[in-house]
Image 1: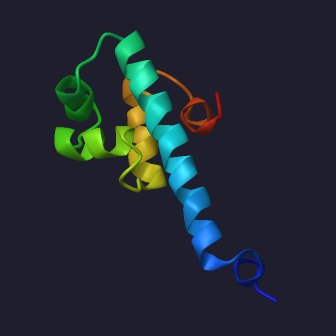
Image 2 (image 1 turned 120 degrees about the horizontal axis):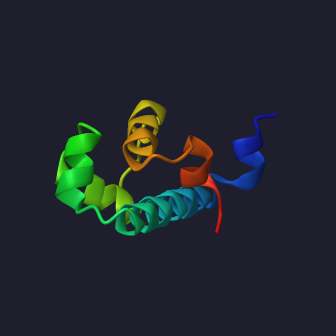
Length: 85
């Protein structure tokens, strides 16, 4: 049986939102620690700053490729951006 059917779709989506919030908080923390504005980090990672803002707020999904570009721009490992504080 598919695991999502046991958990329930609503519960699965709630967990996804929680993960987006964790990633967003981590990105914002490393960005501010580096002294970068949204605009500057977005430019370094080849993203739009409104999209980056939505990611930091946990409202937008991000691909692994874009997350890797952010990690590079922030000079941190990819795992740092996804770990729970």
